[in-house]
Each structure stands twice: as C-alpha cells, then as structure tokens.
Amino acid sequence: MADLPAETTAAPKPLQGMPLVLLTIAVAFSTFMEVLDMTIVNVAVPHISGSLGVSPNEGTWTISSYALASAIMQPLTGWLARRFGEVRTFTVSVLLFVVFSMLCGMATSMPMLVMCRLLQGAGSGPMVALSLTLLLSSYSKEKQGIALALWAMTVVVAPIFGPILGGWLTDNFSWPWIFFINLPVGLLAAIITWTLLHKRETKTVKAPIDMIGLVLLVAGVGCLQFMLDNGNDHDWFASPLILTLGIIALVSLTFLVVWEIHAKHPVVDLSLFKQRNFTVGVVALSLGMFAFFGINVVFPLWLQVDLGYTATWAGLATAPVGVLAFLMSPILGKNMHKLELRWVVTFAFVIFAITSYWFSRFDSSASFGTLALPRFVMGLAIPCFFIPLNQIYLAGLPATEIASASGLSNFCRTIGSSMSTAITVTLWQHRSEMHHATLTEYVSPGQPAATHFIERLSHSGLSHTQSLGLIDNLVTRESLTLAVNDVFLACAVLFLLLIPVLWFARPPFGSGGAMGH
Image 1 (cartoon, helix red, strand yellow):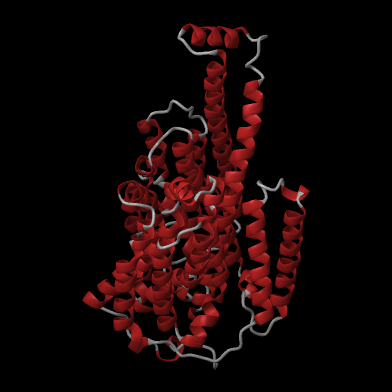
Image 2 (cartoon, rainbow, N blue to C red):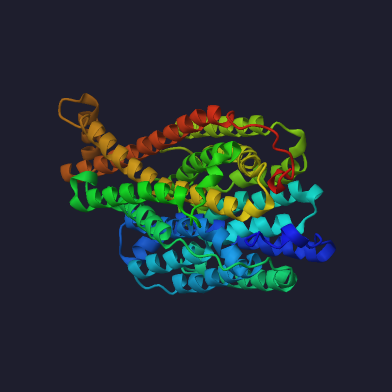
C-alpha cells in the first residue's frame, strides 16, 4: 500500500544504549514543553492581565487560544507525517514552537500575545502525538510499556511543574520569561531528535489534503472556542454575536462529521471511533481532562484573586500533586501488563472525586498546608488516569494508525482542556455573583448580626461608608470561595459519572497493544 509508513515494510532496529537514552530525553522534554505551556500561563494570568491592561477573564484567552490552535492542528498529524515524514514533521514542529515562544515573550499587547499563542499552539500541534509514535518505534516491543510510561510521565508531570515554574519566573523576573524558557530546551530537543532519527525517516506519500474538512474544522472549533471565551462578557445567547458564533459552530461541526465519514482523505479520521476501545478511552480521557484541567485553572486563580497569594505561592500550593505522580508513573508502567487497566482508571477517578469533594469543603481561611494536602493525595490518581487510558485507546490498533490515533485523541483531550478553561472560569464567575447576591441579603438593618458588626466597626473608628466597603470586600471574598467550592463539587460528580463509561472497554489491553498486539 502506498500510504503505509516505512516501518511496516522494513522496520528499523530499535535503538540501544546512549542513543535511546538521548532520544527519550529529547522527546520527553519536547512533550514536556508543549504540555507545560498549557499550564505555565495559569498562575501568570493576573500578571499578564495587569501588564497588558485587560481583565483577568480576558487574560485566560492566552490559555484557551493556545489550546484551540493546538487542538485544530492535532488531527492533521497523521496527514503531515505521511506527507513529510514523522521525523521531519516532529522536528519542524518543535522549531516552530520555539520561534513563536520567543514572539510570545516579546508581545506588547493582548491581541499580539493571543495571536502569537495561536501560532505557537498551531506549530506545536503535532509534537505530542508524534513524540509517542517516535518513542514506540525506537523501543523494542517488550519495552514499549516502559516507553509509554515514560511518555505519559512527562504529560503528567508538566502540568504540575507549570504553575511552580510559571509563578517563580513571574515573581522573580517577569511574565515573558515563561515563554523564553522554551528556547534552549526546544532547540536542544530538535537537534538531538534530528541527529538520531533523520536516517530512520518514514516513507512519504503525496496524499491530498481535505480542504473542505479543514475549513469546517477551523470554523467549527474556532467559533466554539470564541463563543465560550466571550459568552460571559456578552450575556451569552442574548448577544447576536454569541448566538451567531454558536450557530456557525454547530453547523460547521455537524457538517464536519458528515463530510469526514465519506471523505476519501479525511482531515479527521473518524473511522477510528469504530474501534470500541478507542472510543471509550478517548471519551474517558477527554471528559476526565475537562474536570482535571478545570481544577488546575480555577485553583491558582482563586488563590491569587481571592486569598492574596503571589504567583509563586499559588504554584507551590498547586505543586504537591506532582510528588506521588512522579514516583508512581515508572512503577505503574513497568507493571501495566499485570493489571486490569479498567480497575486502575476506576481507582484514579475515585481518588479524583474524593479530593475534588475535599476541595469543595474549604473556606477562605484555609491554611497553605490544608490546601496542599489534597493536592498531594490527588497525585496518586494522575498516573493511574493518564497511562492506562493511553494503553486502552491504542490497544489493537496497527502501527500505521498510531500517529492518526494519537493526533485525534490529543485533539479531543486538548479541546476538553480548552473548553474547560472557558466553562469553569465562567461558572466560577456566575456562581460568585449568585452567592454575592445571596450573602448581601444578610447585610441589612433587619439582621442583628450585621447591625452589631457595623456598630463594632464604627467603634473602631471607621465611618459608615468605610464599614460598608469593608463588609462588601468580605462578602466578595466569601462569595468567590463558595463559587470555587461549587466548581470543585461539579468536577467531583463528573469524575464519578465517568466510571461506568470505562467498563465498556474490552480487553486485552496488553503492553504493546499500541502496536497491534
């Protein structure tokens, strides 16, 4: 067949020794950077917003614009890899990521930064999917479980280090350094990968691009994301703009599905969803990522906006989730073939649900240690979520479909993360307004406690206006906390609802299943 990668006809021998170690480090760091940039901006949003003169809500565009562009490019991974070769596509993707990272750091306005983030996301789109493909093709079949664990560990650890690194760089230098940090790492990763693998390039085929599918994808996903980002500011569907965007998104995505099913060279290979395990794995991964990413966006925002944390301390409060995740990942990867993966992921969702509920019980006086403890426990679930689900959705697929399957699953995962940013921040704001209105009802002359509190404030030297201002600040603080509790509780419920979905997957999911075993 003309469009099969070269591995199917004359598979190169697996790498050994130092070349394998260097490749693993290079690929891991490139994956680390791409996923890191999804979260490194989270804690810097208030700084970026202040620096560029926009609201924190508009500041979150820097998160969602990157995720949006990356998501649109990920389904193209399979076509790009066949057209230009997996190694060449991966290397160019890393270099584009580096260039646009530099431009992000040089941005002087929010529109400029959002545009550079869009281009950075577009350039990095194929990186994560192809990093997994290159690793699997470079490891021997009996060690592919380890390769999968190492790859998943970078995807797991990056969102944890992102807030710490982002907070530290923002507080000690300035926010542009969260982008400049990518330059040396990316260049080194590109050089090592190209040096080791350029002679192992896959066979290229001049397959036509599905332009109609691509236009529908960009229009559908772009309008959907823009609608989610701006809906809250424009009173949602009361706004003609938001209503128009919603209709365009719905029509484009509906036509995309119909078109891609019948297209000869689809830009999104929906035939993969005929595979039961792929469908179950991707649904669980995408919705699980929606809840997980929502927590990771709202938590540091709440700490900074409401509790007065610096970016560094918000990052440190977020960070403990990485300890157990980092320690557990290689152990889990080594023993994957011995485990029932559905039980492993069920365990992960239960831990996620328990810790999310734990978060929903906090008040605004919670200490740093109180906030950090459930983050530490949550780390136990992260490798049990990411690593087995990657194995489940790749189980049974031939080597020729790995790039397309990885690209499509990463597309769904990224869309889940991107939508999560917009929806959870909007939900947080709406619920805080509702709680603010409810709490304000208790500040009236008919409430003895409120009257007594105002009297105490006046005795301490504050005027009536100053007293009411202080009370409004307290009400705002508590309403933001109650709202963030609501978001965490909603995430806990979603994690529990995902458990039955997992059990529609069908074994075996054996190590190396990704390569057709």
